[in-house]
Image 1: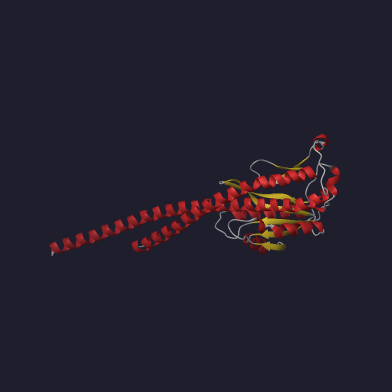
Image 2: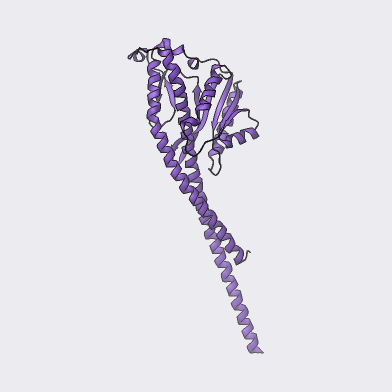
Length: 306
């Protein structure tokens, strides 16, 4: 059994660890609030771009005048994997890597090849160890993203599809459901669908296409100057940047939520360990005192006997 000195040292060590995890929990909670506020604030802008694209694509003749709107048979896919740069976030990065491997396995079973683009060091390190081809790697610029962070990646993805390098672009990030629930999701990114764009729900940060009836699609007709082609050429890059930025914000909010939960759990575990060690320390100390009293008593008795 450990001595009282060793137990005191162990208790002090665990208390120091608990202070660190508690501080990290508070920092993650602060960053989580800011991340969720940023994601919410950017949604009106994303909605307006989606509405402008919807209006430009109402006329069927306008739906094939931009290369990013033209689908083709899928033979090669590129998967953008958004993870964190740092650990200590519970199962956040593990869930991302697991979802990436499941997607890659499914695509290969269908006869398609898959390459990856990583946004975050943890995904890059994990996929490289597994031998997954990585064509580009990016890192987070900080705990609070800005739109400029995604501009190079959005431009590269558009170029990859336009020049035929890849026939499909998918994005894997962790969808922020709540502070207690985050779900890895693979979302279609390119090519853009021809149907109307809309936000699925008030809480979703990605867009999906929904088929509309012909009459409803032609209820509102617009004339553009200099023309829909110029409008789409201006709007589509902004839309891709906005969509990718929204994915990044969702991922960072999920990361902060996962880290806050992990640090909260670590703090609780440290408290339990301290309580257990304190009980052991008291027991050892009491045994030591009892033994010393017994020795003193027996010594006194022997002296009286002599």
